[in-house]
Image (cartoon, rainbow, N blue to C red; front, side, top):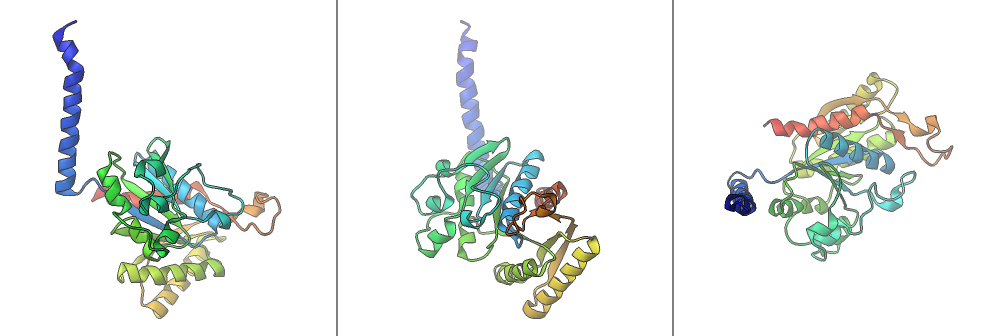
Length: 278
């Protein structure tokens, strides 16, 4: 065998090692290795929230963005959707408590898309068992160069969010009905504290027309300014229908989920991916 050919694998391995070292050095110098954490603060139903996160994550990964989806919606709150979108054995709450390593809680489910469950995170924080570095810090130390971590939750407040990272960007998604508007205002109240008065971006989903969505946002914005002195940022409106209108709920009146259009996921993914331009 030619000596040059025999030595090729060793040279390739050495070059790979040097490349990783250089990449690590660049990350430490410029801080480019950490993913951006986005919290999708949903005032929709739990089932719609799960669908919202999954669709947004898929839209991001189809755009070429390496994305980690974190599902925080408790299993007992789901109705039409049973279980997680992808089976997992461990939870991020166990990671933050130090009982399970990072590689045991992350699951690759598609090209550019990984998944993790986060339903136990809040309990670990409340019981003071969560400790150690943030998820962003742990991901920076790994060889997984995630661009985005998308956390979908119906409760986007409290100290549990600090487990994910120090700088978390939020988007509130609300429907025009009174129940959703009330939940959205509660989200905005809590987020206004953590965001220090910066504008809270809000996307309206559902209703019969754009006028309905705009009018609902204006009511929410007025309430936010009057009660909280918190300005809102209008992200627009996306049409959505009640899933039961198409027989998706099997006639079960308890299931009040909505059928979310793909344009909603694309809009959210576009909003999230804008950070890459800066």
